[in-house]
Image (cartoon, rainbow, N blue to C red; front, side, top):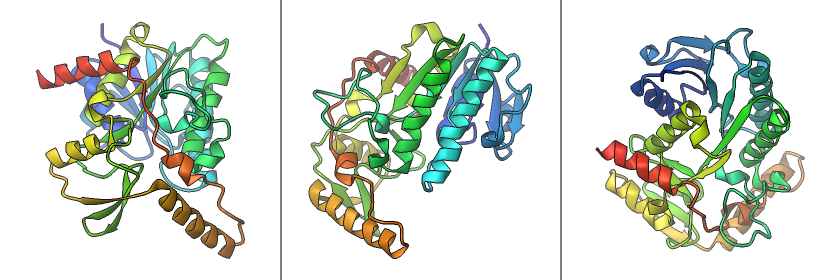
Length: 309
């Protein structure tokens, strides 16, 4: 059955894939973004504006579901407070007011508590207790989830939270931040070891699954950590990147050394600016954690097979 789906962040890397998956399946997409779309043919309507200032009146009318893929990806605490947490609040409240039955919120694996967590990260792993230790991005994603859950509690709104791991884009090859950073040219400092576990997924597969969860909400769980088991280690992610043309060289460094250097440099910069020592716990952010794939394995397998068919 054809559905009309709203999509925030429709012009972003993931948003474009979600829009394509929806239209390829015959659905109508209402896009939300700050600028005009590069491919307007994917949308039956485009709502241009800054959602942090409010969701335009009437823009959610007639939607069968809304996918919220917009969020801050850079900047400091105030940027993430405004464009992640604040926008999440506006979107959830607007969905309830407009009678939108389903809201799919795209979050991140970075929101999960690592400290003191036993076993692999799964859908039952709690949100980070003090997300400010994880930096502005993870804090913004964590608090956005808390806001969504609080507003949706007891409301006539089905909330589905999707937490993708590192998104791998074969059309824009880049080393995920949890694996390493560029040092010079094609040389990268790698964090930890190649055998370390990591959560990751191809962006096309992720987009198709997110689209499916919006159009068939009864098929999916209320919370889903979305990762591909074939990309379960840093070495496997590097192999994927190289298959698609990435030619970097990674020099592996101990996480304790990387985190110590990060703290020293960031603290020195903050002290110079009169803002005190760094509060980000880089060792915790970079700590490798095993992933429980049971929640996402069947979905990933199905949509990869569909893409290869």
